[in-house]
Length: 441
Image (cartoon, rainbow, N blue to C red; front, side, top):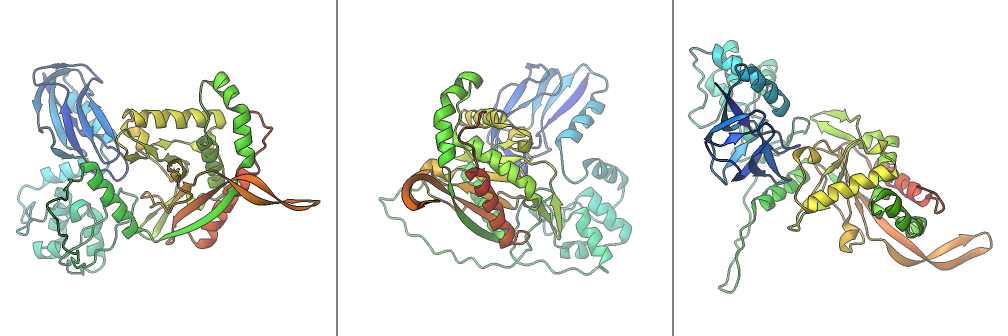
């Protein structure tokens, strides 16, 4: 008999924890491989965690509503396998991305007698790897306390202590209160800075109703504030004549449904135009890591979609530039449908490199969306409207009815200047306006 640890898997970029909403199995139950044992919720998706092995559930380590960090063990399964530990390491390597867990375990074993404790008197945590480096380099607890950590919950990482040592062992004293932007390994941290609590007290009368924010609401709010604090947001706007696209869809939507079994909306047409334009402007498809730029090879389009409770989620169309119109339509409809039903999986929301949101679906003419970190830009599609417009012809100008929409582009001015931001949406405009109303699909 052997014991296998079920760990909370990586749930997507910038997601560091999840809430256990329901245990699907009880202690003593037999578990099949790939059978779901627990339901979890994050700010981005609700999902089930399956078992990687077959066996008997012998221990549940967390209660319902507990908040668990990615990579932590949540349950123990007893199996018949002899080499389950080796198998467990393979799954851990696949699921956990963070500060080299294997190296930390080795460092933990290597530290027999240590003067640097795991937690300082002030309550600051130091990982085994950081403590081992401190022991080797003769860094005292007082020095460790002075290092400003860039890890989760302000923890000092391996890179922090190595940078401290390489810089001649000089570090700024920690500020009294800090703003920390929690992001994934490729996302830069906001520089800690002192802030003052200036919130105005709010008076509440007996007729007012106090509503507690949901966990998802709190996390989304934090993510939005963190994005504004991280990126210098700038917007560009442009109007697009989509009359040919409207005519084409009206002429082909029934034939498209009969042949492909899918309803075609404007969204896959717009997404295809965005993907092809990104290929011409690859420096839109990037992330920032400190003073380095990470140029993404894959074009993975995030698509804001509505959940059943009215919240939004951003599933990702992987390698969107490789899809034709039929493939794009199937991908859009599949993700949107599963989002409404709450059936998205963790992998569906991972790996996005650029995001598109359709504010026009709510009747908005245009919007100024907040960048979805760690990306550097996001596009908002406004409502398609019939408007009077000047039409130029060889015989002169006249007024006619056209279908038009606004698209707005929010981008990170740290790495995307106004020229590139403007040229990018101008190229999308040209792409859409060049649509052949007589084309087949």
